[in-house]
Length: 295
Image (cartoon, helix red, strand yellow):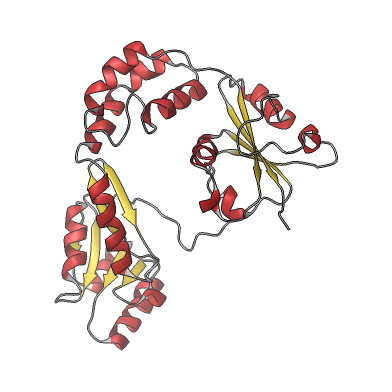
């Protein structure tokens, strides 16, 4: 697996106290950020320690003062962000795209706030303002969605089909929020038990086809035959079942070149099938990745 430099989390601080030390241009954005999230700002270190505050921002102009404050606050049990000093930070603040309740955070681990900003600005032009309304409509329809698709796998696959590009609820189409009810009324039962097999010959995930990327991101199980690069596997869902095949026993190792699409002879992964049988999940997608070096 490829390593994450930071663990991305969305932390709810509404009604909680947050320490912000410093004044001026460096501190003002942090104060605004805390206020937007509903936090209560305090600016006294002793008070923060006494009251068990857990999050602190340090924005002093003096570098030494920032370092001393960070050490003291960390010893008091707080997680600390020091403005423009990533080496002193327990966490960094991303560039935020807000389509409430959809929240997209772009971070670089403190490497370049400017880069994060411009990635966010590109996304601003792509994502419709009504994206949050789509999330709210889907949330309101949860009970009906569960009734329509009682099985969790069926439900997830139905949503994948609807939300993808060109789907009935395409996330980038502004009219999609108004279509949720009609989609639920007309949604058909999804097919069960699909398997796709792809030959991978490049370690660069940019070389994946659009179809390969989509199916890998939707797969319930990923079966790796050979030394599949970590950067490729990182494109799969984090909660997908991962299976490293034993090349001496896996029937798919003898299948030959499957090309870049699904093989017409219906490949299957016995270990994935066994996993899904135990979980009683009917509607599943298994992606088999087989490494084939071009060297």
